[in-house]
Image (tube, rainbow, N blue to C red; front, side):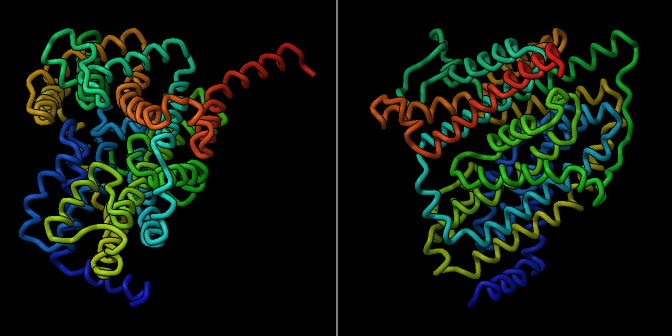
Length: 501
């Protein structure tokens, strides 16, 4: 069968009642799992894996694809409403979305996040369908040097978001990187900064840091504000405002840049939606005419990061189908579903099971379209929580944080870490210290270290390998340009002010 015939055959299979129900069920589960702090999309996919034993490969992967698409979006709901990102990838969305909420644009922010996520997912799904067969040759040429360059770009491009004080941003970033080194070294297996404590040997999970800094820290901040003024922050019951075509036209540049970064980085195996989100946000800030406003509630930052997150999902799926290599944690679990049913992902999959492959491709595209009404319904559900008194809502959030933190590794030490970082997050807010670079260091620091050390071992400690390889060299040079450009631009602006024409 030809490509279009396979496409329409796949569409018919997706629209079968059982298959469509599995896809829609996965979508709702994914949005809810992504929105609840600590209950991540990955946890949801792992939990449904045993149920795929009794299903065929198509409904199984449609269920998981629904969780995947919904999960990468779901964290933006609680991020915008409560300043609590459901997943690390939603942190940049939270930086702008919650500030837009405070400005009174919560309804539009929710609608914009839903539509940008859907657009990013649909575009990445279409490209996945068209490019999966020829993709294998290009992707196999990348090494750890290219991955380090991409992570380095993410760290450099976002650390300058704190235009008030670059020095405090660096301190926060390096402190986050320090936290990421605690535990057993992945390369050499040596304990670092454990001080003889077995509790520290397992390391500090970045999700625990995220829950503490954002969720617990935000609850403490709001309760203290209520204690000072006698009343809490005004809480409205928002609706979801779907943006018009005119509103989309106004942010077309941010949307296209988010798509470009999302699709491009999604093509890198292992880059993941988290790195993509940070890089897209940083690139958008550098392209903005008013970068100093980022972090105060600007639409460009919200649009770029949310579009890039879902724009990267098709690339991660493409690795699984074209190469048999999982492009993310979620697709690694999906690969398990393939193997459970006796199917080996890889290039031969397009020859041996073309109908099943195109059914999943079409299901992925359709899933992102169905995400629009599903996202609106789930957003309204979480918006109802805005009517709950702050003291009760705070207790509700803390209980979910405790359950989520303990459920990550079933380790009671994580509960203490979460409480500690909740207090740290509260004091960082009180003294106006930048939280985003710390989160960035915890998430991207270990990735950068792993790729750097792997490259050094393979290159016999020759650091020039990062510049002799064309792709990694170009990315690092672009990263350095992004970092120094604000300094150069500020210097030129000062000179023009001192010497007017």
